[in-house]
Image 1 (cartoon, helix red, strand yellow):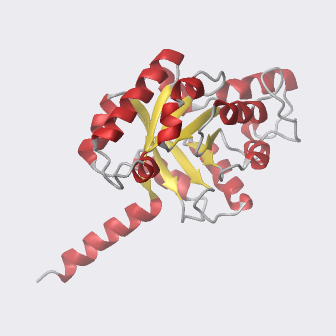
Image 2 (image 1 turned 120 degrees about the vertical axis):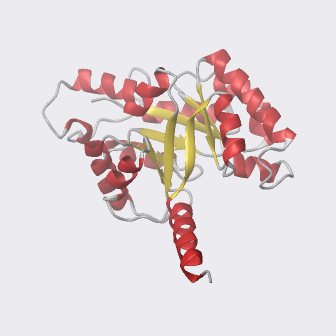
Length: 256
């Protein structure tokens, strides 16, 4: 069992994710893999999919070698073990502002001795095979990707404390909400946002975390943040790609 996204991050490779907000079919996993994405950002904060649908897509993603990573709702700690037990290889905790919130994520998501996650029944990541439980839980601890999402000026102010939390792998900037909270909505290249990225990048380097980015639509700005080191990059979401391609096609065919 290998979390290919975590493996590629460790090699300093760019990994691209796609937000799954509206899609409800398991085929979205192989479709997005074929499109070239590395991970699915299964969105329970803004999406309406059930945990049953989430589990089905996650299981298909494991078979397709595109990493299923789930953003839980704000404060949705009680969902974490259930999500991981049913196929997810990573958890994104949104709106982290204090190190204690990140610490709680690690505690719930990791098995002993690193945390207090309980052991369920069969392990989908191992195809439900009989495995040595100690070896399996140790390996799952290594392979599970934990992401603290920072989305406010207050979170940026506390970034050193958040980034220092052991067990967190990625500090991901929620650029859309950060710009909104900073008084420059949708201005993702604003100096305030650029300075925030620089500050988070420094903290990530200091504490051995990977830098993540989400919400940046402009390609030139996105490439600039990638150059800063944001190699866990959410490239867009299903509804945006579907609407953009559909509108382009309709406009082309209706053009005189």
